[in-house]
Length: 251
Length: 264
Image (cartoon, rainbow over all chains, first blue to last red; front, side, top):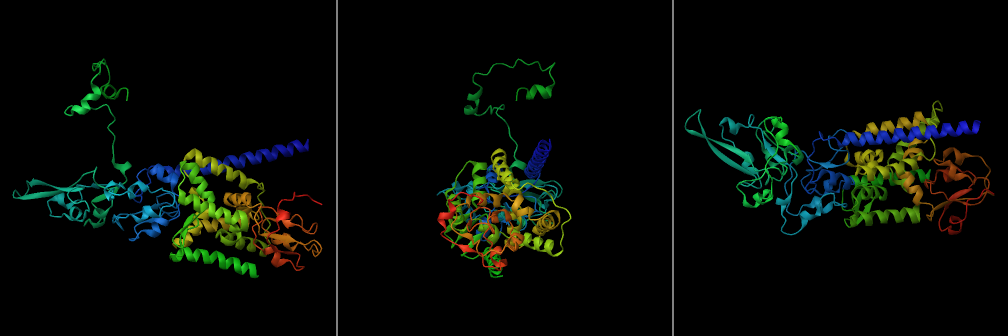
């Protein structure tokens, strides 16, 4: 009898320990995976999921960065502990032509495809700059084009748009406009922004980008039109169907 | 004392070399570059990365194999006693526990828990597509903290100290740590071993008192064989405390390695 009881006790203890240990680990990982943690990753880490599965947390990219841009996350940082990230307002990425951080990575968590010839830093995508028109003084009518001038992709990633200033009647607004598809997210603009808190910030792509889906067709694009060549007329009734559901049905 | 001093010099020296960030040694204990060319990487971390990403990068693979060969063929589980910075914390905790004669609580964790955690780490790495133990690794937090000169790792160090000092003897290294379990599994046939001479042993049990993995000293006073278990960390503490000269390091004791463990 005692043997069976002892066995049951051991088994229960073992099962509970395994269960709680596993649950603890899983909970930690889940918490660490939550999307609200904002971190700009080094060049070549475009796909956050792929990056996290490959990063061995060795800090070789950090050590090889000539500008001390990168840091390894400690327990108190938002980024997952031990992974490299940078804060553009403190030190941005200066887009070295030879990208030594990618070269240093032993596990290709930073994608080696950017090192191929003729790629250039233009293929990187660390984030996207976003302007806050309320705190950007250019939107007030004050002349400031610092972000535009420091941008390594000047007139491509940030363009200035002229607009008539109705208030004075004789001046122009010169508004910084970020081209989301060109901006590589280096953060030089955020570093240089003259306001107390930067009016232009670099956010990870996933925080900024939307996704159209393939149910909208560019009517003015002959090639895009091809996609709906064989489409049947809509059989839904807009009168009885909720317009919101009607528009998004079947997506 | 000489092995203790040597071990501390080794542990601190490696961390100092990493912290100095010269061409000699760059990176940290997860992965690094020696002399700017030779890759080194933690084989357990590399295995987790492989399971998480199903991708093998040649640099990490070479580094892992190199480290694995050094420990698996020559040094055994010496990483735990000679390199890992957590060893200093748990040794201090064990010292405090001994000095204060703290025997109050004793968590009865099963000895093979670390092997379960090892398996769990590998399974979770694959299932969650992220190196599971590396994401929560206390070793990682401590070593990176020291190398990079940050402060928040001290919280973890304190936690580790408290667990070992107050919750039970040698919990962290010999019951929880999956990295130690990994090296124990790969170190069975390593050349460097502790040799025991039963003729000299007076059964004073000092080695048992000090050994962090005392089950490996099953032969003390019984048989003149080498310590063959992969769980031996080659710390040399038993050699230092033995006043009868019954224990010592030996290499090339091949014969003993492959003999079956039989209690004679």
